[in-house]
Amino acid sequence: METLENIVSITDPIKFRKTLIQYIDEHPSEKEKTLHMIDSLSQESKIWEENIGEPFETNQHRWTDFYYHNLKIRLTNNFSREKFLHTLDVAEYLEQHQSMLLSENSNEKIKLYGKTMGFIMIGGVSIFIAIVVVMVFYFKNKYA
Image (cartoon, rainbow, N blue to C red; front, side, top):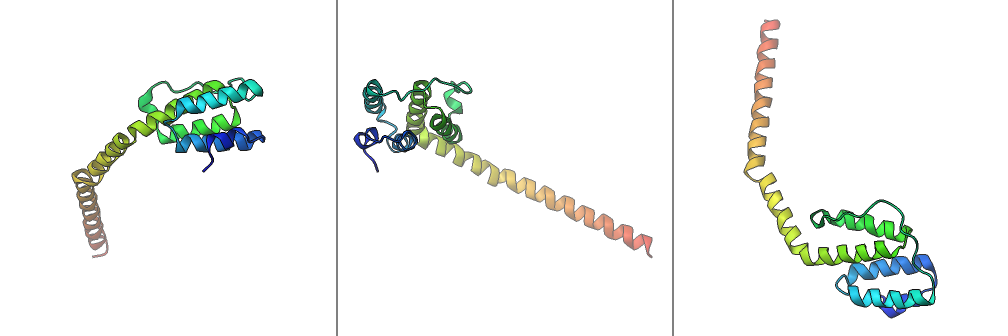
């Protein structure tokens, strides 16, 4: 695990981006500290790029792990201040709401594999048995 001070000293831009994104994953609640360090570094050298790409998702209810993963890829390819700030916001949001998201997913699994799945299985087996009975009578009458 790299510290923020070590990350700032990395000179290779690609390694710097990837290591910083990994740091954000591990420390999503250190938004202010991370931003302050990067801003002090950006005064010495130009690290920010112009923001390009698709617009950000503003609805926090749609901020999922999948969206966050795609956002990190976009940030690696285009290291803009806007993308960086948005990535920090999404990481912090997901950390705060992770337990709630897990409980919602477990409720969906209970619904899917509980009574609902039982009714689906009973219906499927009933249809299968009905088809087999119809086929048996059809072939019995055809060749009898």
